Amino acid sequence: MRISSFNPVVCGQTKILILGSMPSVKSLEENMYYGNPRNHFWELMARLLCVDMDTGYETRIQRLLEGGIGLWDVFESCQRKGSLDQDIKEEVPNNLVDLLGRYPNIECIVLNGSKAAKGFDKHFKLNIHTIRLPSTSPIPTKYCKSLDDKWEYWKVLRAEL
Image (cartoon, rainbow, N blue to C red):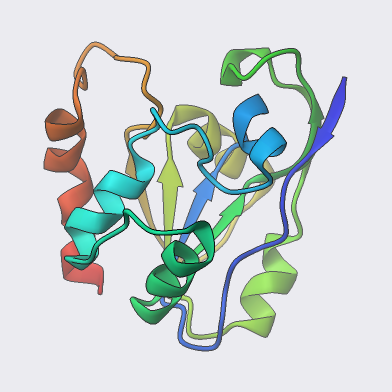
C-alpha cells in the first residue's frame, strides 16, 4: 500500500528540523506526528524543552515551534505494510532542499532513527549540521531499551537550542 507523509511543521524561527522516516500506521490514522502513544517522542520533547506535553496535539506542535523545533519526514511517500521501517519500499524523498531554501534559519537536521539516517544519506548531499539519534519508537534496541536510555542521546539537542 502506498502511503504519504504529512506536511512539514516549521516556521520562521525553526532552528532544528527533526526528520523521521515515515509516519506509523497509528500516526496516519490519528493524522498527527508521533501519534502512537507508546512512542517516546513527545516525552523526550517535554524533557528537552522543559514543558508539559500532556496537552492536545495542536498545543504540542505550538510548543515545539516556540522552542525552535520543526518536524518532517525524509520520505514523501513509500510502499509499506504495517509500521516497521524495514518494510519501507519504493520510497520517494521529500523536497528538503526547497524547504531549507524557504526556511534559512534551520541550521541543524536531526535524524530520528537509522532508516531516516540511511534515507537522508541516500537522497541528500547537504552542507548542514546533522545529528543522528536513536529512534523514538517504542521498540527496544540493543542500546536503547527505555525512555531514559534514549534521553541520554537526545539531550544533546539542548546545546543546539
